[in-house]
Image (cartoon, rainbow, N blue to C red):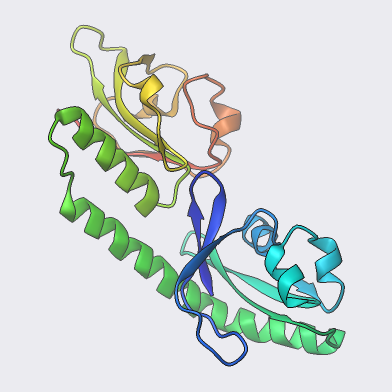
Length: 235
């Protein structure tokens, strides 16, 4: 059982595991070459009673352990977004009827597991916000907070900006963290509100765009994340 982490690459953080009769503890692995990535990306169950190693030839664990079959089911939050998965794999082929049965059992437990995973993410977010930045300068504090928010909220990017009194139609980026990396090159960039999702924040309102953000806002200042959330804050 694992949760999705969005860093330079999409990774899975294993929350609980059992392998050859042993608990492996917490660890992470790169998801993009594994069926786990497709499970989380699609939100649909993936069932491979045989031949999974041939379908994912770059999955090193499958090669090292001789994995032949796989079943994975996505875990979702209250908004229906995939935030992790539960999966099982075998070193031998399994019967298709058994594979489908295992997927059905996983789906029965998926809502509870999804709720527990979402709860852990919420606690992590609250912990980050409560801890606050520890940087010695305002710039370092903003960078640290942007990085903490990006990781805790499981988003591809997070930025902090301020409104400009002399340019009411624009905001200035103070810090931006993209896929776990600080984007220092965009700091102090002045961005017009118009043409960005942030335009909806003018007037002190909260705003969110759950889907289609990239399609609706083609501005070069926007991130490539599929879903973005901006929260209004004034200084």
